[in-house]
Length: 268
Image 1 (cartoon, rainbow, N blue to C red):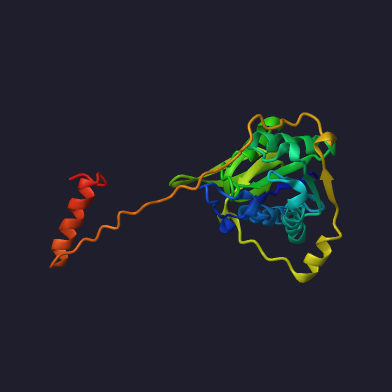
Image 2 (image 1 turned 45 degrees about the horizontal axis):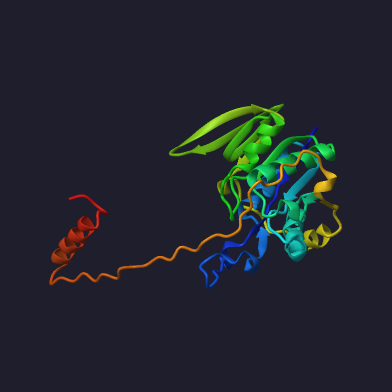
């Protein structure tokens, strides 16, 4: 029986965003945390192992896309260790300032390079539908394309029947049921489960599980970023602060409608 790989990202914490006086985002100030939906991916990996792939091993692969790596090493390790506490058995972390800030192409190529370098051959690769700092939702699909594997996105339920994966996925205003042969890559939504917090024993045991730090020089065929993010601007939102008053509720509503029409928000 094959193993399970879950993709975990040490992501910028959007709750700690801060701007500079020049109007750009201060990335250096923002700490890293495990991307929220990756917790759902770990929970689903544990469920699949316990229900369908008994005896299999759960690996996590993380690519540090925010540097400097030396400065952020503690945050990176904490994010990965959370995955270990939740049920991951062994973790691989790609840390190298040559690929920071990283993009989706670089991240996907590094993940595939780790799989090949360490001869990890999973039956299923799980990822969150998107990360909290970029939310592009590209990496899992790019990994599937590089490995020439079936890809199921936005899964909210997963079953395994023999060598076939059956998934329910959210598609706009309806639910689609799809099948794919294993091995396969799947991105999951928040709705797939409710991640359990690790127990105290699990947290203590996590530090004893293997964590492998991998440098770019250890890997082959990693695509380095051709363009790097230098800054991101904070958009200042200015409000007109228009007060609309009327003697009656109907008069106030009419004035509001007239104002919205004049601004082009609604059509008369």
